[in-house]
Length: 266
Ligand code: CAA
Image (cartoon, rainbow, N blue to C red; front, side):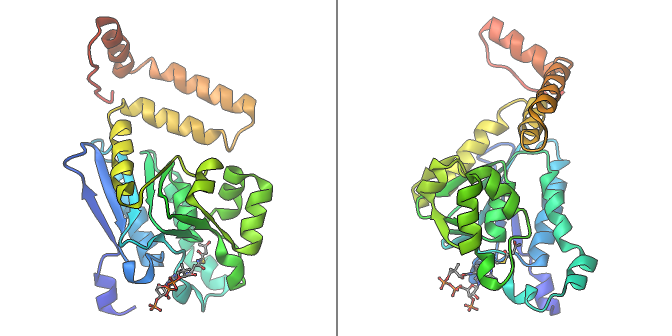
């Protein structure tokens, strides 16, 4: 890596003054369809972790710069010379685990291609808003490899085994309409509306009581990891715990008083 390339940030982090509590994080390598090289993934992970400890941040929207891609995957040119030893020693893929632990809700605003690591990043977010021309896929098989950042697990949970197998074993993509129908994305909108729709969704989440939002996110994610019994128990504990918060008292009092609640995050 040259000193120049190291100096140029690969992501942009922009708090949205028009959307209180919402921060827009943009993958900023449009010339290579926002390919996720290690520097980008490092900056992205560091930024998400830092925003996650900032109480004023209530929801993060992740998008890709330019109009062609959210992200076209891991950076193939950077990854091409890798060996198993290099991948294991550098441990760059551990960053994906750090993204999974971010507590603030993440919304992916996907325009164009979300392929390979790009699809995996969209799936690592909590909600996906897609443009009507978005394409999702795990084309790694065409490179002689397979998905390595969650694709075999998250795509299978999202689409079911047969469809996930089809995409992963052929490298085919699916379009936005099919992604919506199958639950991979939560909204499909016109291309030029994608970012606004994602920010509007983030606004709605950001306006909710933050402790309840975090507990609910954590509980929904447990649905993928625990048995139904353990998941229900986890949910109930989080539910009970929220009754220790000021926001629960405020939310219920405001309902009874027929006024708007004011959340403290306490
Ligand atoms: N890595 C590095 N560079 C990439 C890239 C990637 N994943 N995807 C696109 N680019 C670069 C291209 O090399 C090209 O750069 P140059 O102009 O310097 O040649 C530029 O972005 C524009 O791309 P194309 O010219 O290829 O654009 P296109 O419209 O003809 O095709 C595309 C678009 C179908 C998305 C095609 O770029 C493509 O197939 N990209 C690779 C997709 C892929 O295989 N992703 C999986 C990567 S492996 C992975 O992600 C592993 C994992 O699980 C983490």
